[in-house]
Image (cartoon, rainbow, N blue to C red):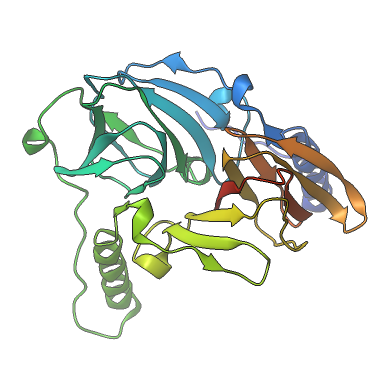
Length: 308
């Protein structure tokens, strides 16, 4: 038996109240710097340890991206799984490999890996030292849209696993449906043919007008076909900074090495300074004025910037 819900309040008043509550609730989730020592790694069913810097599963809800850290011990191979969102890895320390759709990619510190949506993947450590890496994904965005799916198949060989979801090639014609089929088929093929592995030494650091040197790790500029997530290594000279700036999207910066601080505020002269060190994650919220400083007068600082 169906029921009908009615209201005597206008949609305007409902939406105004709902949006105010939404904004206030999400303001409680704002962060500035996530400390490495505050991220607790726990054993998982995949055979590795994982901890959450930012994300729902670490009680730090997000809307676009998440950030986790993982450790794989020597002589360990994780289970193989796939999901409806894409993900990226940044190798912090140790060496190992990630198998994506049956192809193995060997990695070392500061390399980057892009894992396309629906790709079967697992990682392993054949070395003698624990490997540690960061992961970033678009899972929160797909969660918001109700499109998150994950499938774990244990240690099943890749050859026995189901293929990626099929798609239809569009027929000839100028009608809306034919055009949509062709457009989506072309996009699916492009997404499945992008760069997967970026060895750190393959790209050069280039000077920028902001006073730093940078290189792409994952980006369409170097052939990656990610959902929009990019990774860039930023190098700060000893005792130097970058120019003050802001942008509409949020940005997260993982501290690879060095010590410093970041200014973040709603105006160039209205904000706070936040200290950071190796292993921390700096969270720059939407449209905040911000500036990062290397406080070490003798050594470089390196940050990996991630945003959509």
